Figure (cartoon, rainbow, N blue to C red):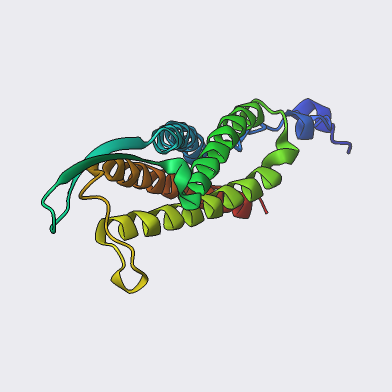
Length: 202
């Protein structure tokens, strides 16, 4: 007795008609991470630009009245203080300017990478982000140290505090250091997200 499998629907084609499930590898968390990265890089661009411009243009001219205690005569003397007089502030300006231009370039690379281009630049970009993070933190520390010295002085070295005379200059420096510290924190988050992303794909 012969049994015809074809009559019962077994003609050898069933394997080809099995349902195929298309599972997308794109996860919602990845999209959120990319959007947050965009926001952080734009934040760094804005903060570093403001910090570099404010400190680079910071200067103040004051007029002092000097009285001779012996003769009682008074004389006026004018002087100015500029950020270019301090190497730490110049280092701060250069570091923030480099971070500004790097952030613009890295944002463009990140957008291109999202569209499927320049995927090989992901690791070099992460390394460059770490370098910018170190550069910003070091320049912030240098500028903050001089700002504190200008605020409180250093009697052992004979340095008087000058912020009671050029308070506008000191306020600009302090505000810029705070903004740059915020930019450094944003860069730290960018680096953390990049490390997490590389770890997930490794």
